[in-house]
Image (tube, rainbow, N blue to C red; front, side):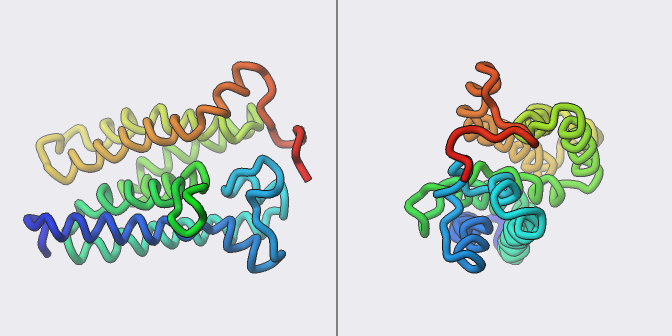
Amino acid sequence: MYADKVWAWLLTAAIGYFLGSLSGSITVSRLFYKQDIRDYGSGNAGTTNVLRTYGLKKAIMTMLVDFGKTFAAVTLGKLLIGDFAVAAAGAAVTIGHAYPIYYGFKGGKAAACSAACIFLIDIRVFCVAAVLFFGSAFIKRTVSISTLLVAFTLPFNTLFFFRDSLDSAVTQSYIALSVFICIFVTYLHRSNIKRLMNGTELSFGKKGKGVK
């Protein structure tokens, strides 16, 4: 491993970005329907829009692609910088997903990639996040609320489970990643936050303008 080499960190980040730029939603919509998911529904290249537009099976395929590219980027990164790859490659994947070089830098809101990153941080952190997400989704039936809830609580969730190893550099990288996800996912959902405040955000069973 080359964790002490700048080039290894840069290569890990580059691998993460270019793999992250492979959009699961755009790939699925083009492969099965010869369409671009960004022309339908909310216009977002994400799993939720695929679910609303094409159904559950295609949404699962989309999520598998986005999880898979995150795992692949981290696995390759670990060969270069070890466990630090979870943070370095994970952050790069989410950036690539949101601003993909292959699709005019117009991508999704990185929810699925962030979920994969959370899983790679620690299964306990992921389980808490999953309970918060699905519990909130069941009650509010609004994906953006559930996603933002997970994002807001992630740094505290991570700190709790790693409270006994805060002096570890790897632990610190996990905490840094959780803070990054919190800030970045919130930023990507800024339009959703405005709609939530205005009472116009889409929820399951409720369609808005532009849904095809």
